[in-house]
Length: 181
Image (cartoon, rainbow, N blue to C red; front, side):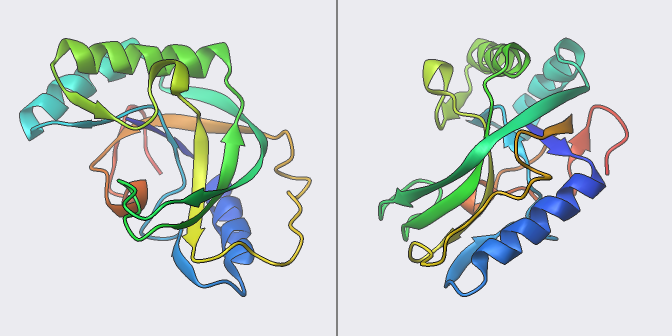
């Protein structure tokens, strides 16, 4: 269960991520086949369970909401990590923990638990909303500034659902509660 920005924000985020990855050995960067998004929850489930979960979530949650960018983060990923087994350096945008996004996370978590799904990642009090931009092999050497257009920016996002892939990515062929890209 994820929140996906509109096309203009996706393009801005993708360009910013590509700029950050310039001059590094990038293992993954958001782009055409890896949509920038905010994860509400990841879970193991069958196709039938996924349909039930999506039905419940799309009825219980707002189709659209606004998230605010809180800052840029780099974090070391140890080898053996679930999302990035080879390890590396995560880079992404942290999202402010607004009451609306926390409620959306808790709702999807309660629904997943009610269905007996195996949830994974940071959940409950450990939930840390963010937009993963990429993973590189080493920490960048040049100073990095968050552009003014993203600093404290509110980004409109829409509820969507799809199959999680390597590095916690999603292809653009998602199910949307409203419209889609």
